Length: 423
Image 1 (cartoon, rainbow, N blue to C red):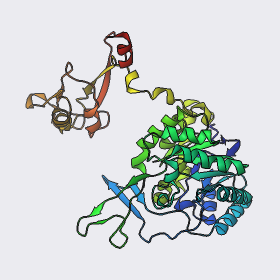
Image 2 (image 1 turned 120 degrees about the horizontal axis):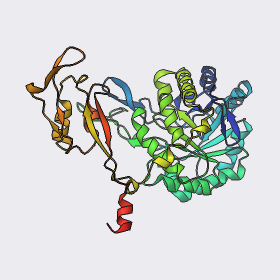
Image 3 (image 1 turned 90 degrees about the horizontal axis):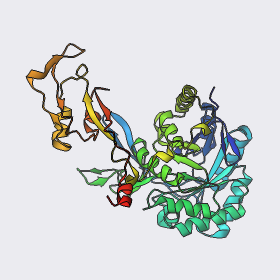
Image 4 (image 1 turned 120 degrees about the vertical axis):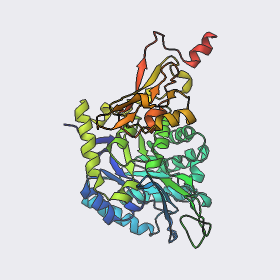
């Protein structure tokens, strides 16, 4: 049986699933309900000098019938007093000693202020500290959050300050709103960070009401840029997690677009030791962790992985620079005539949007498919097909269009190899 227990910076978590710092971890009551549901850890909603949040603060993009495919918020850090948050952390740790409670911290950029908040958080019983260097809105205008995380020297300096006072592991949380996140991750590592977590939310404006021209979310007809998250950001998060995994030696906490066990496993395969979830918990509630844990355990059992470490990072070497990809690898499309429904979408997509490698179906190509429908089946022009995958991606029928590898007897050859050989 798969063992989901996870070692992280000398700490043991019941499983790799943690709640990310945000609305689901705003109070002790919420965190305790989450632990009862099966979450292994929780990162407390960021603690600092309390602020006042706006009333309208969330926005979303729906896609193809899916609610909250992309989610945006202009909510800031905890609006509750520091002492209240710390007292609730102490109570949660008293009741749930085997679960991890990580205090997310954000204060002004002064050494003594950071020393003070670190000591107070550890005094309350926090197992680890997450330094919020990623908040893209509201706090960054005050010289905190992403304003720190976008400057390597600031990230290194404040991480160093936190480490000077800390006795527990320190995690630096990284912003994606930079040109090269690996430089920020390396700065955190130089500052002594025990781990990094990424990604925080992405700068965004969620939309505009075209009747009154108020951006969303609407705060009295006005709005502000906010933080974008949810399922839509997973590809960005996976790219940045894999990039950081190639550059640092410290553990990584994967965040971004995680809503099921597959999302979590992909983050882990690209180098994450644990993962954090926020939007999915806000959408569906805490019990989603049950399916996440069951699904991940079943996957591990099916593949013979006893622990997370057995497959963590396995995909990292396969993420390469474009110049190192094999230019002699070739695939072409195949259409399963029995599954085709004759919609012609593959033809339209290839003809207008790709490489003109599909012939339009004609009545002469009509046939009965497995559903008894008479359909006109398009034809792949094998000699012209460039293997771009577009037809398979747009096809509405699962496995109707597949990509077939063609062995032309050529040795692998990358662009960099050709340049080096002077070809």
